[in-house]
Every structure is written in structure tokens, then in C-alpha cells.
Amino acid sequence: MTDELEEIRRQKLDELRTRGESGSTNESESGDPSEPITVDGKAELSDTTTDHDVVLVDFYADWCGPCQMLEPVVETVAAETAATVAKIDVDANQELAAEYGVRGVPTLLLFADGEPVERLVGMQDESQLRAVIEKYA
Image (cartoon, rainbow, N blue to C red):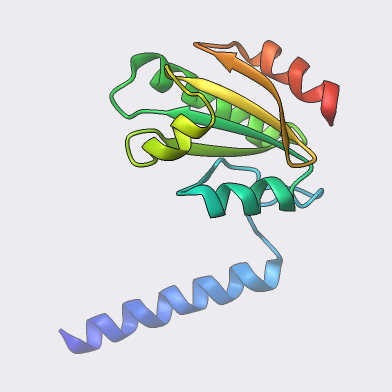
């Protein structure tokens, strides 16, 4: 059993090394993540909005049907636009949601240069999100 575990560990380590050498990351050429990132807390949100020029923040809840419908749209926007997409679970971050006036989910806030510039509430289509992002990207 121990030999099997060692073999699995060796294979995983080799895979990680190969990925690192190929330069494969979850970031696009512009340095923005190509997948939504999970933000937990005010400090992480502040770091994210400071480190990236345009950040689309998705305040969501796991139990929210429209949030679940919006998820693939948000993932596409993360992969195909210049915006960094951050996801914040309102149940785990109630104070942060309250600070930004989130009263319903989904609520999307767009930050440009560290400041909130747009607010979208409810289900949004991809073209709407792209248009809002392009105004600031």
C-alpha cells in the first residue's frame, strides 16, 4: 500500500512540474485570471481590486437559482474578456455584502481602478456583461 501511495505522489509531482515548465496557468496573456476566483473577506476583495484594472464581482448564494444560471455566463466572461471575475458567497461574507449594499442575489459590481463603477442586479446576459466591461477595459 505504501509503495502505491509513493507512486501516486511521484506521478502527481511529475504532473505539477510538467505544468510549471510549460507555463500553463489559469491566467490569460494580459495577466488576468481566465477563471473566476473565489474571494473571502474584505482584505481579499481589496487585494483583487487593487491588483487588477477591471474586476467584475459576483455576489451570489449557493441556494439561488438565478445565481446558478448566471455561473456559466460569468465563467465565459472570465475566460474571454479583460476583466478579472471574483465570486463572493453572500452567506459566508454577510458583512462584506452589506457594506456594498447587496440586498438581493445575484448582484454584480464592476470595479475599475479599485473603485465600484457599475451595479447590475439579477440575471444578466453575456452581451450585457461584455458591454459594461468594455466601457472600462
